[in-house]
Amino acid sequence: MSPVARNRLIALGALLVAGAGLGFVAFGNIGENLVYYWSPSEMLGQGDKAYSATIRLGGVVEPGSIQWNAEHTTLHFRVADDVKEGAPSVLVRSTETPPQMFRDKIGVVVEGTYDKSGVFSSNRLMVNHSNEYRAPKEGEDPRQWQETLSDATTAMGAK
Amino acid sequence: MGKFIKWGLPALALAVLAAGWWLGLAWAPPDREMGDVQRIMYVHVPLQWVAMVAMAINFVVAIGYLMKASWKLDATAEASAEIGLVLGTAGMITGAIWGRPTWGVYWSWDPRLTSQAIMLVTYTGYLVLRRFVEDPEKRATWSAVVAIIGAINLPIVWFSVRWWRSLHQVQSTPKTVDPEMTLALRVSAFGMLFLTIWFLVQRYRQALAERQAEVALPDALPSDLAAAGGANSSRVA
Image (cartoon, rainbow over all chains, first blue to last red):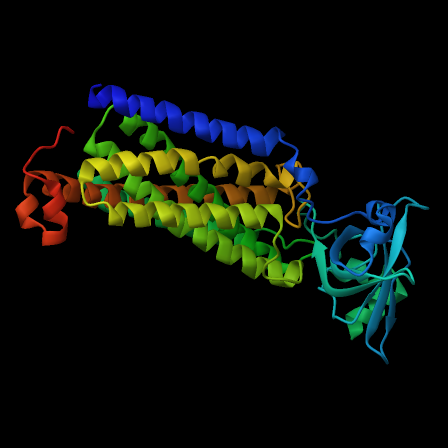
């Protein structure tokens, strides 16, 4: 075989391997085994499997659920599947200072353990931002608007 | 043309990049939620885009080399992989700096960050392989295979935020970004692109000169390189 034909065959083989690999990743449902976080309803549906293992729970902060205890520096809030009222939710306890953007209705991912008392103890609280970037509305300083959302977040902002 | 590449292109790139960053830092409004922190977007996003462009070039010339062997294509492959790795690493670092104040963490093993890390390791491996193979023809062929297989990561990195749940948000579009911010981002991205093209041309010329020296004068190179270069037996144009 001439070197040219050999190289072209190598190219074909490499492309086939790459295509098969990509196809497997894209359509092979590996996402089901590689879930970055569980939603509250998924976690609650796991039954005993959800207890005591370190897991990630993701969702949105249930409106009005944020409670900050300044004396014990603990933060309680509920993570819900979505912002609709009555969506499945889980109570989360965190002793960490939350990121600046933490507020009602924002997306969060918490890492920690869920125990049989129904409380998720978080040792890592992450906030995820949407893909929207907007200027502040007229007469509004950046971030100022969120402090008016609830007393709980105002208290946290002042901390 | 030579004069333009030597002086005009870097001047153009730096001028456009300066304009884009001025627009982003001083002219565009801050984000209503993140405030001024959001302005790192004008550095992070262009870096990631041009890293993707450099790695896509690497993929195309790798196939090209196997179709029709040429030192020009091999030199382009080396240049694009190196520059793509530098830009992608800078993109990842700026992403981590952005992540700390917004997400609360520098790093998390989410699909986007993990696939990007695998991509950077792959291209590091690609460059290591190139250094280890002394015969220029074998080096070009073997590294082309690694480049083609490694390139499956490019669509995975791009679509990871859509295929799987992640901490990283999905791609923004002009619909989700205010027009002033979109303009600043576009100007910054073009500046970064021109800078990347200039880097690529410079690095390509070095790589091509090195290849031609390896083939033409194997004895003139350090002994470890020359030994495998063989006695002018190259079949590659």
